[in-house]
Length: 596
Image (cartoon, rainbow, N blue to C red):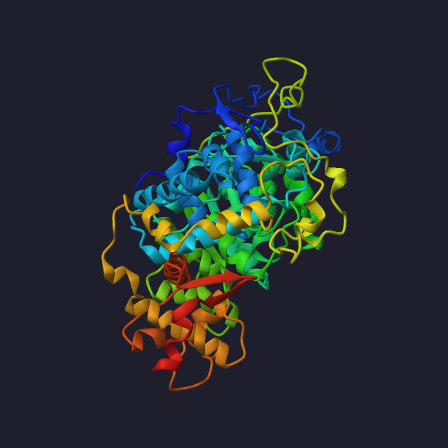
């Protein structure tokens, strides 16, 4: 199965977007990437030069057209979206996908092209599309188009400024030399979407400074033993030049980041590995606030803070679970330093195992609940036992110097818009940011959509009909069910057995209904808890009971990775949908319980 990265890199249409109405045609043109200087004898990032580092201009790799298109499409989705990822995969690049998605006046021809791209991308992902799946895609397409009209501006330069928080953040996509290629394993080895692009603060070369990074994860409420394990392993790994990845939280995460920077204080920046923190929301919402000195130190020491989500995206519980997949994908080896029975670190370990990463767990006192999760991983053979904090050579590859480059801020500054070589035409007809209302909730919270967003947009110069306008409504009403079916006739037809939920998916649907009957939101964690709880007991399992034990008694085993995979397929086929972090059953499936 080919990754979206390889397809984008091999595309013969790098192109620039030129204005024709609202969305551009693609014309040939160079794709600009940031130039980097070779490592210098001294660096502005070391702890010995923290003051100089704080005065450095923000690192800003230049944004090419494909990366900007990916940023815009990320704005259109609530979180990882398999439907959109399949569409981009079928289109071959994000620019083509965005151009067709935004062309609401293209009529049947546009719809057919989008349907073909979605079906082709899904086929490349090893799946087939039936009528229900195509309907789910059309529903998603409508949402994406509504979100496009909520962009704060239609001018490409203003969008770059907004997406980078006035240049304080950088954005990279698969075409960037700083893109960590191993993250594409999420689309190769799992039926879930890889990030379309990554936002970052700090040095982007940290992401590619080590060919096989080490991730260290664990509970927020770790004790001295857990923090010692995390900090010591991170320090010794960084001393050998390895990149240390974690989530920036309290407890184990913070200990791992500090340990990596301890190594730099001891052996210097030329030999010490960096550290990267991955966040579950926009980078203007990084937290916890008490860890701000840690985040500042990571940036000052040549590390990076990254996220797959747009600025102003609020971290939510479900986004932390999806964030964990990025930590697992970035790493070659994952160490769980200390974890309780329901720690999110176990979710990261599951992602890592399904991605083929090596997983290690530090054993702990069986009488201390904080060690339960790690002991379970070892008992269930889901992780190898970590026998010593000094055994770095057993869990990491050979020692190496970090492959980092020191940033030339002049080379990374904004290109001169007056030169013919660097000048790019706007992607969308110009509409200044100042016309946007500052208190618009959709501007501050990308996952929320106002009920009447079009009323404020009647004076815009955007020429494509907005959702809800008369022309668009008449066109939509003119598309009959027969036309929709005809649009997908040339595509391969799946077997009819795919149109019904599988036995596993029926169990997931039952778990969702159980959540609703108990008055609980059907979040991913709540669904997993229901799947792991025997129905006969009617009670949630205790803190000291392994969720897999109850499942094994019924001849099955559920984990968050397996559940996410089933939910992804169910959403693809229109069986469920996710709204504000809650899974909802769609259509006839919601009535099945009443008909039994």
